[in-house]
Length: 259
Image 1 (cartoon, rainbow, N blue to C red):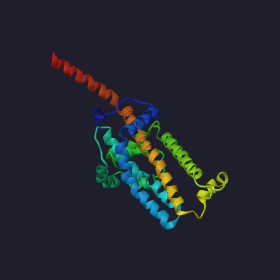
Image 2: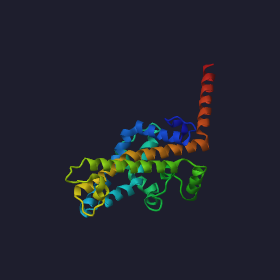
Image 3: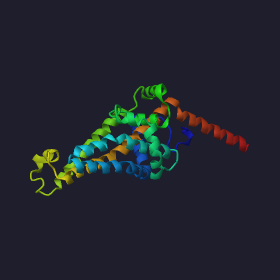
Image 4: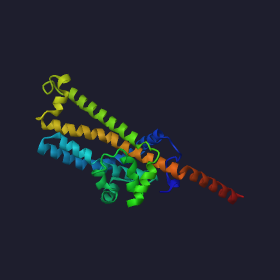
């Protein structure tokens, strides 16, 4: 990774400033990010709908969409990690790269015993971009995570935001139903969505609402984790100082040539 090729301003930031930079990346590269998002999310979403149709239980489909978040994250990081160097990644590029990401980015660990790690968005660039393995990777993780990095706070903020949006969207959906489906809205909200026997369209709506919510929150979670990682490397490796010296050297060289 060459700091001088980055298109974002390199300087030491607070954790919240680094997270805000992640939001700025989403605003700048949202077209490519959501193209990659659709490529990796729509097939599992279709499979979730099929599970809902076959078993009639919305938790299966929603659980599948939730469990495969690490797959979506890798596609998003692939786009972001190249966008900050001025490269444009299309959805076709994501499709071509996806098999490599599945094999060489620790995806099996991310889907099993590391699935609930609060710092997974911060650790993802180490697994996916640095190309280190074994003991070297463990040492690298310890160094970058030392003295705090904001990743755990980011996880809980995004988790709470996701929960609030999900319940809010379900509540809005519930209020818009005709009275014959939900005659007593105040008393039957949770019963309506947790009943043993529900119409198929309600199970499908449950999955779609969750998919819509994570489509808002998850790209921000990945982008903010990536910018926290960049900020931590800037602190440890002095990228801002290095770039300052390179700028000064280039200026002196230009003056010598002109004289």
